[in-house]
Amino acid sequence: MSDAESRKPFEDRTLLVVSTNYAPEVTGIGPYAAQLAEHWAAAGADTHVLTGMPHYPSWRTDPKYRGVWRVAEKRAGVTVHRRRHYVPPRQTALRRAVFEATVLAHGLLSPPASRPPDAVVSQIPSLAGGVIGARLAARHRVPYIPVVQDLMGAAAAQSGIRGGGRAAAAASAAERYALRSAALVGVIHESFVPRVTAYGVDPGRIRTVPNWSHVRASSADRAGTRARLGWSEGTPVVLHSGNMGLKQGLEVLVDAARLAPDIRVVLMGDGNQREVLRGRAAGLRNLDILPPADAAEFTDILAAADVLAVTQRASVLDMSVPSKLTSYFVSGRPVVASVAAGGGTAQEVQRSGAGLLVAPEDPAALLSAVRKLIEAPAGADALGANGPQYAARHLSREAGLARFDALLTEVLADTQGRPRR
Image (cartoon, rainbow, N blue to C red; front, side, top):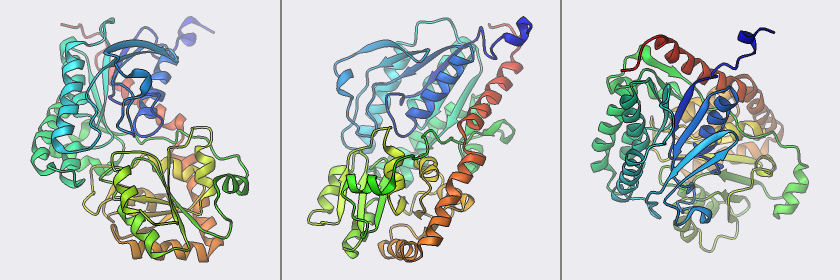
């Protein structure tokens, strides 16, 4: 094998990834940022990550990092630079603005002290992360690639956050700044493209880079997992896993549990609405609120449920596609999606063939779909079986990372031989 053939694809490159969320966070955007950075490190790049302190989805700083101002650590070949920031225990537009402002200020005042990068990649929905990425790329005169996971301008308007209407214009302005200066823009779903182009981004500079499934398939005995969790075989279980925030509109599941005492509803995860939901569910013996599952047992618990639920407020259309869907599909259980019909989440469920759509914020409609699946177990199993097949065809980690490799290769090729100023 020649020296050229033995070289790793990004050897001698320095890359900077800006993502407010990162490992050891196990849900949301953090796992994707970590797996991407680790992949590029394994491909030979000197990979650095500028991130915050672990806090998601609980919106509480991980106890190991409390009181830490700045730290650099090595994780799986990646140099991770953490900067302290405010973590709001409850979400309002003002509190979120302070969160973003502290991320922005600390990131710009204390960027990683490393060799200048060859490219900067940032994860949005963090407005601060998007602006930091754009500013650092401009400072070093290198290509900038923002990846749109959520759109905060739309989120402020659609999620129901207190004071969100006033924050939407400011958030959209920050997103416009971050996106318009990009060499290329990645979006995790094509439903984001119209809003990104409305920010002035040339459609020819947008690339679709879907999230991949980052969890393993279940290997545990389903009956054994149910017994361990105290789920009776005679009682159907509807499970929601993931963030308990405003945009999820999880009240619909609490209200569904109240209407159907013969069905067990399980909310597994954390988030700023957890205690609000607990209060709403007071007295309901058929609703459980569980902490997030460990990675080792996560898909085993998903696979032990009868139905997996994904819910969103009716106003959520084009600002978010839940990352939980990739894990749901791998589990092999049918999905009921209580979401707006025109949004990216609905499109993904329809495309997978792994679930049913119902009107959002309608507990009766959700229950009707759940009962339809429970009463026809063979049909429910058939729907669920479509999920792993769809994930294998379209959501494999290898395919997802290859799309990012192509994105990075494209911008680096455009700058080949171009001197930095």
